[in-house]
Length: 71
Image 1 (cartoon, rainbow, N blue to C red):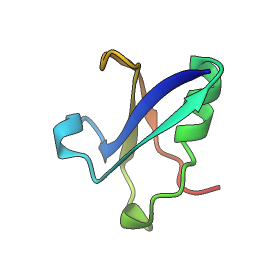
Image 2 (cartoon, one colour):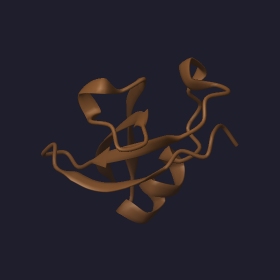
Image 3 (cartoon, rainbow, N blue to C red):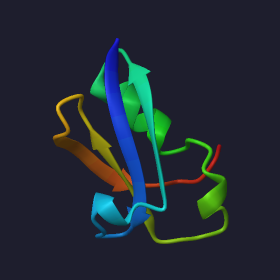
Image 4 (tube, rainbow, N blue to C red):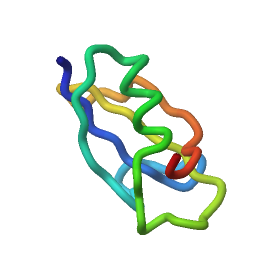
C-alpha cells in the first residue's frame, strides 16, 4: 500500500488554499485518484468548481483532477 495526501481546492488553486485535506492509502495511483474524487468532504458540500490535488508520500503532486463530490 502507498500513502497519499489529498487537498480539495477551488479549480486552479494551490494546496495551501485547501478547503479540505486528508490522506489515504491505496495500492496504486489509479485507485487513489478514483477514491479522492469522491471522498466525503462536508466542508465543501454543494460547492462547484472544485478539484483534488493528490500528493505522494514525498509531497510531490502526482495528479490533479475534478472533485466529483461524495458518491
